[in-house]
Length: 298
Length: 303
Figure 1 (cartoon, chains in turn orange, purple):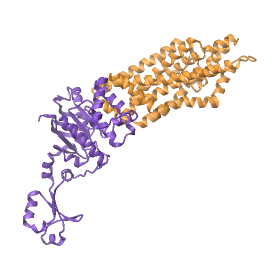
Figure 2 (cartoon, chains in turn orange, green; figure 1 turned 90 degrees about the horizontal axis):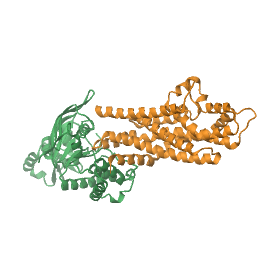
Figure 3 (tube, one colour; figure 1 turned 60 degrees about the horizontal axis):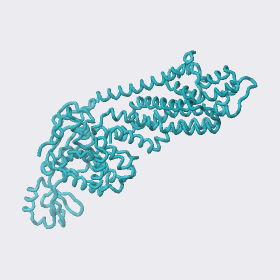
Figure 4 (cartoon, chains in turn yellow, orange; figure 1 turned 120 degrees about the vertical axis):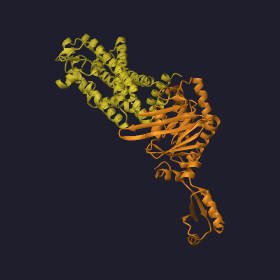
C-alpha cells in the first residue's frame, strides 16, 4: 500500500478511535448549543423582531427558520475550525508518544508525513462537519425550512472551504507545538476563543468599534459571514415576499453579520471568498515552507 | 566476520554538554553487541545519530557498508530499532500498526501481510493481532515492538533498553524469541541495557562513561580485567580464616573470600586444602565490571 494513503488512513483512524481527542473537538459546538438553549436563542430572536417595522409581525415558522439558520451557521463556522485543530493535534501527539521518531527511522519522506497529517485532518474534520451539517438540515427542516437547492450546495461548499481553512491554520499553529501541555493550552484557547472572535457566539455588530474593526482582519470572520448568508438567504427572501421592507431586512442582515463592513465599506461576497481562499493558500504555503525549512535544518 | 557498523571519532555536543566524545568502535556482522553506560552516558545519543534522528558534530559512521552522510536511506533500510518505550499507536490494533509501518518501507499489501504473518508465527502473537496495542500486557506489547523493528527484515536490530520494566519471566521469553530469530538470520544485535546479566551473553561489550569509551572487550576479557573471583566457603568457622589471616565477608550461610583471579583461587586451595571441603568459585559478574570501570552502579533500569 502507498505510504501516503496508509498514513492518512492511520491518522484518520487515530482521531476517531481516540475518544478524548474526538469529544474534545466537539466541546465548542456543545458550548454553543448550551448557550443557545439558555439565552442565545432569545438574543437571536430579538435581533430579528427588533428590526421589524412597528406593528409588523412574522409567522413563527419564519422567525424560527431565521433563528435556526443563525444557529446552524454559527455551529458549522466554529466546528470547521475547532474540529480541525483537534484532529490535527495528532501531529503533536506523535511527537509526544514517539511515533514521529519511529516514522523518522523509515525511508518515508518528511513531506509525505506532513501532507498525510493535512489530508487526514481535512477528511476527519469534513466527516464531522458534514455530519453536523446533516443534523442541522434536519433541525432546520423541522422548525422552518426556507433553503433552496443552490443554498444547500453553497453551504456544503462553505463547509469545504472553512474546513480547508481550519486545517491549514491548525497545521501552521500545531507545527510549533511539541508537548501535551502546549496542546492543552492551544486547544483551550481555540475552543473558548474562536467562537467569539469569528462572530459565532455574539454577532460582530454587537462588538465595540475597536474590536469589530480588529476581527475584520481575521479571515475566519469572512467564512462565518459566507455560511451565514447562505443559511439565511431563503429566510430573508421569504421575509421580503411577506412584505418586510428592504430597509428592515438590511438592518437584520447587518445585525447578524450577513453584511460585513471593513472600516465602513460593505464587503462584497466575492471579497469574502477571496479573503478566505487567500488565507487557505497563505497557510498551506506557510506549512509547506515550514516543512522545507525544518528538513533543511535537521 | 566483516564489520557491519564502524564508528570513528564520533562527537556530539548539546550546548556546553558533550554527550558523545570522540567515540570509536566497530561491530561485526552477526554479532551480539552490548553498549553499556549509565543514563546520560551517551548511548541513546549515539543510537539516534546512527538512525539519522540526530545530526552528529563530527566523525564518520558506516553502517552495512554505507556512509550515513551520503546514503542514509540505505542505512535506514538495514536497521530496525526498538526504542526505550513503545512508540506504536495504542488505539490501533497490532495488525493496523504493523501494516502501517510496513507500508512506510514500501511493502505492498500482500507482501506486508506475508511479512506480518511470518513475524506473528515467529513471535507467537497471532492470537492478539486484532487487539488494540494499548490493551496488551507489557510483555506482549514489547513483542510487537520487536516485530515492528523487524518488519523491514533488517540486518541490524538496535535494542535500546528493550526489557526495562518487564518482569524476569517476560524478559526471558523475549530474549529467547530474539535469540532464536538472530541465530536463524545471522542478524546483528546492538543492545543497550541496564540489566547486566543480559550483557553477559554478548559477544562484545563496550562500556561508555561521559561519552567516552571506558572499557571494551568480550565479557570474559572484561571480567578478567576488571573483576576477580569469589570463593564461597561453607561449614567453616570464622576464626579459622582469621587465624590464617584470610580476608572474608559473610555471605548468607557462607564466608566469601575475594581473589584476583582463578590462579589465585587455585593457589589458595593448594595452600589450605582443609578449608575447601564444601565450596564454590564464582567469577565476578558484569555488574562488578561496570562498577569497577565507571565507579557507578547499574541496577534494573535505575542508576
